[in-house]
Length: 435
Image (cartoon, rainbow, N blue to C red; front, side, top):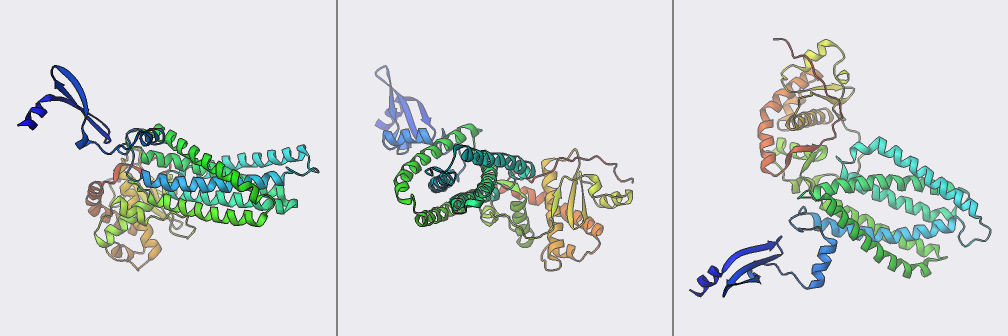
């Protein structure tokens, strides 16, 4: 009875995310605000609350992806170790340009610095031109590559003073490496921010990430101040500490990219999910597929897939257009040319059409690469030798399985309204085959 009377006194409730819950009661004609202990999380002390508001996005944890905290932990650790390595590299670079050497001139040091910065700027422009379009679709690989390259650049800077005749050349190469790191690291961090944002709060997440990194750099600065007296004029200790910091840095980076669970389909994740589905009839969840996704750039030769090519890359004569349209009523064309699977996309193709085309191209690539050592739905395709007949048979296969496949993708919480499949910009309209 008393509980019923208390409930009647509550006329409104409010909550702050999932952290706090409050209720408004009416007692003796006056309004009273009271914390609902039953539905509130343990908020901790005021210091903890201030720390969260300063360094975590508003609405955390609901406003970010589930992998946010784990990724940020490893990212913070790698930033700390990178800060310490950077201090060692900076000290070596300053010694190399003549700081502390009475024979060195300001002009010589300035020229060396200008040449280093200039070559780095050119490297930044060149890398962005050549690889910029792939940084979204392969964010994990390029994120890890950037950090490996950054460690390589810092090692070169530490080693450069020991090779005076080649000092300028070495620091210029290191500058190019660091410029590539700046492009790849910044761009892939932006791609990961898009993934982490669950309420269109990319700016808030990016700003708080900057605050976290600044705090880590401040901690690294304090530790560096303690290390500098020990490493000055002690090259052996410098290299030992650099090696230890680099191992920690690379390990933390590997764990960071491994912790990311992206629900958008790129070529690697789609390939993993599709092959598992074709071979075993099982559709992997985003968590399962991301665990299998390679995070190192591969230089192994495979059958290349080119998405969004010109019509001339597939069809060299009118008769080949009819071959490309055999068993095909889809808004894309597929052909096998010069050992590559090429896909020409129609101007009216939807995102589902793009996924279907990529799936078909992956099937053809697997058949061409693995030959007869296949099972499941791909085994029948492997018996076909003529390239155009192989394409025709693959159209039949994809027509039979794709609708069920994409339905299961939706059920497994994969995003099918957008992809990271790295399509080129060519779109083609062609005359349909005459009946």
